[in-house]
Amino acid sequence: MLVKCPNCKKETEFVGNPFRPFCSERCKLIDLGAWVDEEYKIPSDQEVLSEEDIKLIQERSREND
Figure 1 (spheres, helix red, strand yellow):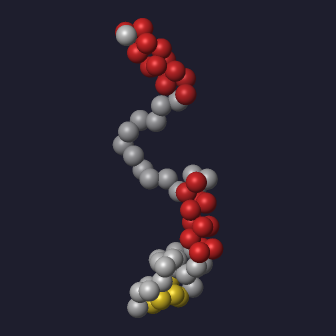
Figure 2 (tube, rainbow, N blue to C red; figure 1 turned 120 degrees about the horizontal axis):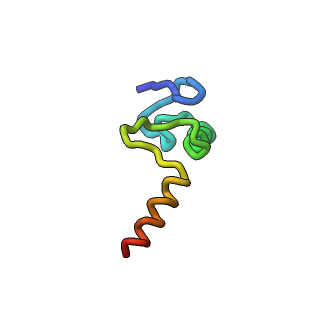
Figure 3 (cartoon, rainbow, N blue to C red; figure 1 turned 30 degrees about the vertical axis):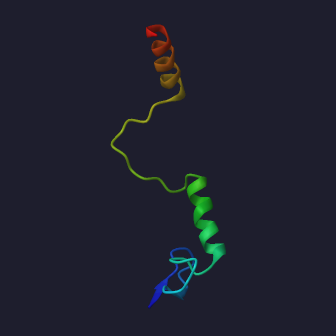
């Protein structure tokens, strides 16, 4: 079965391909790099805290110990 590489769109064999769904190790690493650089993000319902908020929470936690 042929599938299109998510990165370069080249058609590649899915079965027996060690890099699937990518066509090559290069395309697989490009995709991994995009995740590491936070180009892709998974939406979340959780509130994102700033570093200042995190420090405040940590300080309050220490005070309660």
